[in-house]
Amino acid sequence: TEDVGPSEPLEQSWDVIVCNQVIEYVPNPVALIADFRRALSPDGILVLTYPANWPEVEPTDLFRFTRAGMEFLLSGWTILDHGLLGGVPFEGSELLPLVYGAVAQP
Image (tube, rainbow, N blue to C red; front, side):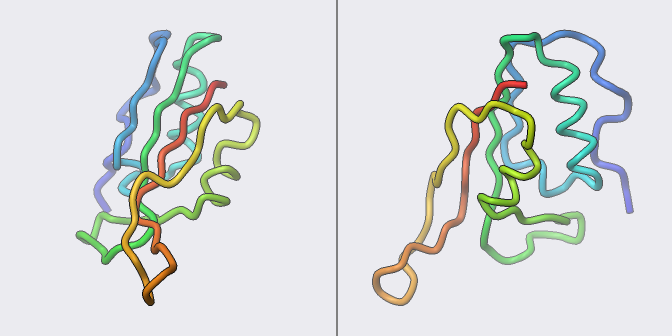
């Protein structure tokens, strides 16, 4: 498959990295999170959103994370906020999660 991740390591120090609805397309999300950690300044912030449940969008749509799965991916980070950003009613009362967001520091 086509590589849709970073073509080379992020070598600059950043105060904020925003990754909005992209991580599901990256062939190696573990490596991407490691690149983010290396690229963030010591007090830097990662703002990350990711889909949970909805139909596959296209063949390069590779991963869907649960909340627990994303927290596992962010192991070793300080998670400042992590929660459901949107969902739809399911079977009358239960909310089917669609999008989560996380804010974390290395």
